[in-house]
Image (cartoon, rainbow over all chains, first blue to last red; front, top):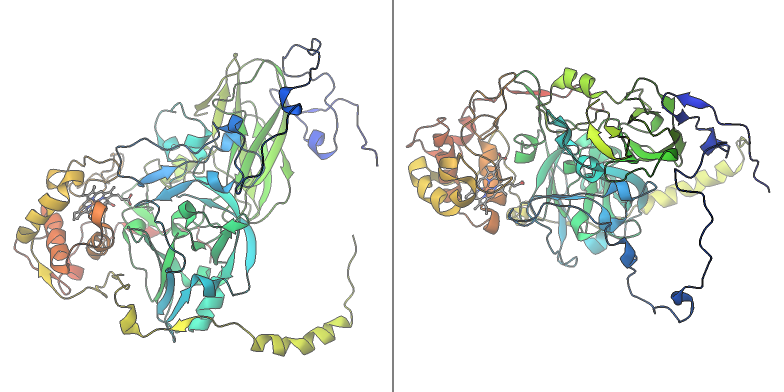
Length: 423
Length: 179
């Protein structure tokens, strides 16, 4: 089969150089687009490199990235914090596709990463159940399993964008508390059915086996809907920093509720009002009230390339690439703008488009070398549209810390440097 | 695109369904509630789960100074360790347009949470090391520093859930949770 190439020019689709997404959908060609200002002089003559002349390395039990990729790492603040408090962030701007490599999946822990011997780990289900039950990891591994690709986003992701002045931050710092894996495990509903739910039960208190015994109350409806007890992450056992040997996945819900190192599930009539659902992860509004139990991570997107730290190399053609996700379902549309939101054009969405999983979007951009402000705006299947920063602040103010999902803006200056701005 | 027509195979699938149901796996081991007790550390806002024992702020001060102050600061006001948080003060800072200082006193809706969290997670370096008496006492001390209880008020399973926190009515449900 031959690919059909369209040679007519791709139309501008929005202001300041945003081109039609036909280039991605139909393989159309951008006539006149050049290799981004790189001189198109002749390439150097080719020589045979040394690694073609002697045998390469032997086998390794567990593969590692190329040493030339050593800068692609999670970022986290240096001590003096007590070890394991705080978060490490995914370098989203250095990654492509929708899946986060397990070793780069962000982590938020409240008292470090416990080293758990899976043979000694236990999960207990008790409280308002007919039969309290204990499960070994081996027992959990014998149930029929299910896989799903889902994002987990920390409730505190993007909190730096609440600041009154835009800070010089890159995508890892602004959006790096979101990662996506293929998670495999046992449906929680299967185990709750086995234990037998008492009619008064409405909540499930989930607790981790870390030193903080991190604990959250989860509505029983979610537990019975799509909650998964995950044993595997991207095909291998869940990483310790992500909850080895078993973590809870509540697709689309606030990251903190997806309790890692899960050791206990207690069914109750009411929520426990734990520290992380009262003191933390509640959203103080403009008035004195705070939203409590804010479950879904609402529709959001970010341009990962170009972005702060990834400078453009002269005027010309660029692909704008980014991620869009919604805790309420699938992404329906992503629009991009190069003029700070004055005009928009739809980006191409790269499949698979899955509910509660990030979608990679792409747009074509002919940069004319002048100033530009790049933005992306996602819409989900519920019709919810990612708010502007002003709309976001208008609804709830900027004192809420958590669940910041407003449109992010990267300003491109004449040198091609990108920076975080409020536009 | 094709549309599959309903086919006769459905009938034969139905006949195997009952056998499959009978094989629903059950690998959980029953456990007596008494044997879960050591793990069952959740405390409800109604006080469910609070152990016997008691403590006062006067008794709690020494525990706080020895085991908490290094990170949370003298009298809970100036934490010296990032992310540990002030435990005391901030009253009135939730008001519109103010920069909120959220502490046990200014923000937390339930005093039971203080017992629950201290027992499961604090002191940071050696969690689950305090006795129930010590946890009641240090909780009483933090509540007293916030001006919520008196220095001789006894905190126990009956009194702690009855403590009325200043911001108890400060929380409202999120309007867009899934049904």
